[in-house]
Image (cartoon, rainbow, N blue to C red):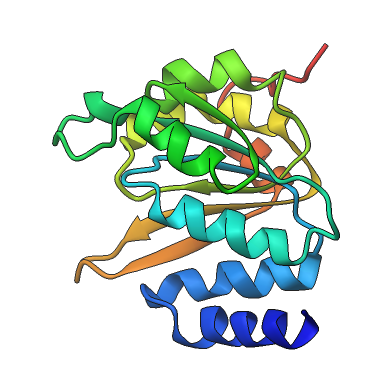
Length: 182
């Protein structure tokens, strides 16, 4: 098992596409076990599937908990999977999956208190920036001091990369007082 795990790590961290996602796999391996993952903007769920499968390699037998927020079949471009299909696909991996339909502004306030101590939160580039800004004060409720938030952005050339943020940096972005769990 150890040789297979090393081989899969090398494949993911050196050869996976898109290139900017390679840092996710390195971080998961360095911080293992990563068992609570959230993603805002699932799209076709490919990245979510890969994250769950990779995190399972280093989870020491613990079940991965995954929260996904997306508009699903209600995406403006019509490119989302139906909620039922996404749930079936991700549940088949053996993770405890919670999928919440809606944009960040409507969904994160509903789950921020229930899904706590997220170790890795990914915000996809295809998400409405204004919706993320409206919900940013809810995100620190979900995090802890060791959490990493990766906010995917597109540069002028259309290249994707991640901005890395800690809980303290996310708290500093809020314009209103941070909403802490009661």
